[in-house]
Amino acid sequence: MSYTTEKQPQGKALDIKGFLREALISEIVAINGYSKHIDEISLVEIKELLHHIMEDEKRHYGQFLEALRRYDKEEFEVYVESVDHVEIKDKPLKKTYHENKKLTAYSILNKIRDDIKGEYEAILLYDDLINKIEDKCLVKMIRDITKEEKEHVEELTLALMRLDSDKYGPIEDN
Image (tube, rainbow, N blue to C red; front, side, top):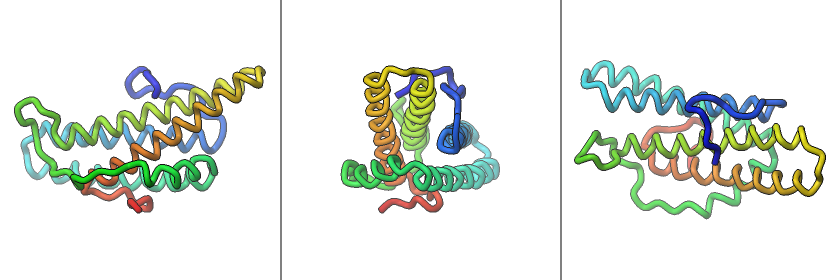
C-alpha cells in the first residue's frame, strides 16, 4: 500500500492504465467525501441528495475498474484469482452513525476505499519507477510487487461490494 499525501496521487500516469487508475483514485476520494458528509449532516433532504450523488460516484468507480480490467490483463487475472479469497458473512452492512466511538458502517466502507486508493497510488508509483530504472532484477521485483498490489485492489473491491448495499455499476459481485 502507498502512504501518500492525502488526495495526492503518487507517480505519473504514463499510459491508459495509469490514467484509469488516477480516475479510480479520484472516484474513491469523491465517494469517501460524500460518505463522510452524509455521516456528519443531520438534514435528511441533504443526506438523500448526497447519497444519490455518491451512488453515481460508485457507479463511475465500477465503470473505470471494468475498463481497467479490459486494458490490464494482469489486473483481470488477479481479479479472477481474488474472487475466492474474500469471504464475508455480514453483507451488506447496515449504514449506521457514530455509536460509542466504534467504527460505523460508513467509516468501515470509507477505510476500505482509502485502502484501495493507496493500492492504486502504489501501482502508479511502481509503474513510474519501472520506466526509470534499467536493473532487470529490480524491475522484476517491482513488477511482482505491482501484481500483488493489483491483487489487493481486487480483494478490497470484492470486500467493498459485499459489504456495501449500494451498487458499483458493471462490476457487481460474483
